[in-house]
Image (cartoon, rainbow, N blue to C red):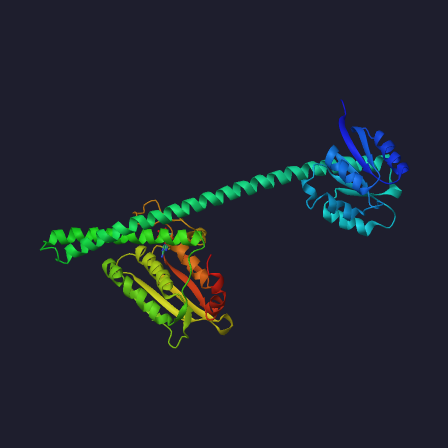
Length: 399
Ligand code: ADP
């Protein structure tokens, strides 16, 4: 089998040492060697650039440069060089060579143990190491490029559905308002059947608005533009507001919706609008998966002193969630559907938004549930979470 050609540049101010290296390498069977020699750092660097050798052997101590200065003069990124570098050292230079290894040389060889075998093996290893390193670098570069491309496309998609949601919301709001005007009799008298049908149309508009709002929020989360507006707030007020908003849905579903808030809880710094959104989402789900005649409760209690916060729990005796889905239901777009499910609406974004909003408040959210017996969604809000947030607000609170 013919040997592979390999051009080695030897940089050493001692002609005798240059000659020994050449002799040793001629004995090495793996490559068909040709040699270039330089006796100073400066001329070595010039040859590295002009002759593009396959491998460089360089003495640590050169008359004009030491090993580290030589490497620095070659460029900051040794991995980008088209050849590996092996450093030859005199007795006692081992500490300095460790620095050269960190800077990226492929190997080093003390001159006092130099032999045909050790030098040949060092060249073989250095060439292989360099080949693997270059392949790895190439993969890293490709990965970086495809990551950047994916990020760009993701941003494009986010911007698109952000714009789309906005574009759809305006005519939808107008449609809903006109339907409401007709229902209220402001455009003339209507009969009961017309009122009923228009009521359904209005509900559909509301459903679509909720979906579009979720899409807008996810676009904001994905682009780091969902900012909180934290203010000192009584948690009881937030719970009351959420329960009042969901009461009509509960009544229609024949489910008793109640709230128990521990008395004398401290005020918390929070974005009340976002916290109402979290609660209405959780209550909405609880109502959705609980049969008529059931109940849904919201409970707020103070956590033990060492945990410094409040615990909010939304419970239902509904269909429950299988243990393997407990973590997954908080993922974006995840919906746990049973085969006999009637489509209940929703995009699988609600719990994802809840998790991100709670995280922005420095809290945690989780579920405890037994299939067939019901679920309790818990989330915590730290007492001092938002004072920390206020401090970091200048940088923008976002995910
Ligand atoms: P969506 O309600 O749009 O499907 P969510 O993110 O709000 O999306 O919920 C994800 C999934 O978690 C739902 O599809 C449902 O299977 C499950 N889930 C959420 N809340 C409950 C609950 N209270 N009881 C049973 N399953 C629930």
